[in-house]
Image (cartoon, rainbow, N blue to C red):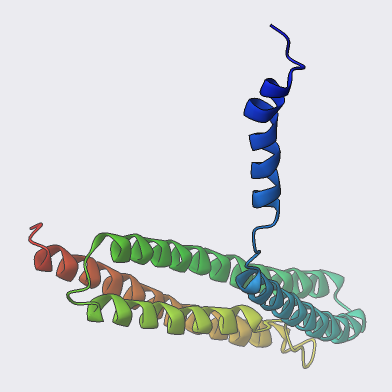
Length: 196
């Protein structure tokens, strides 16, 4: 059997070439990717702005700490300031991760249920969106110490720590409310579709 015959080319190779040409000319729908890229660019720009702001405040704090006579107190204040910002960053990152998981759960639920009562899902999505905005705003906050004097550095640190604590508690409460709205949507859709 000769593989170089005309029949071989017509039966095996020509359809492959035609299919390759057809699929290579498929339209590309990049509108969503462009939006995602612009959202990512905006987020990166916002993060860099926040980091610049934090660096400026840290530089001002370092200048004040350099004038301290007690080196140990200055080092402790610097460490506390860094830790407060790290705590805020880690906590908000964890909250955003949980909100993303909740969004994924709602998307799965939406695929499974029929369109009888989309109100529970819609309200849960709205709650997640508003909570995500709150968490991102919290992540943008700066908790660098504003040192007024060497004798008041401890009280300044306590004020900033208490502010961080109360802000994180308020945002965490909203994340819990978002979780409860997702659970309520799942329960409602489960009873609507006769699964319970």
